[in-house]
Image (cartoon, rainbow, N blue to C red; front, side):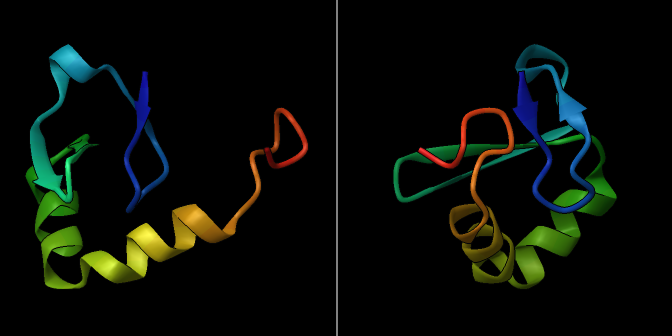
Length: 60
């Protein structure tokens, strides 16, 4: 299961409405709207994902 970086919704990889590959990483989106928002400023969403610790395991 992946997380849509825009709306934070869980997305099943095989059911994603859209995907984007950047720097060898594939990002999954619940809708074309979230995908379009991501494409407008991908570093905003990628940076947020990298800067926030995982809530499940203390951030490692």
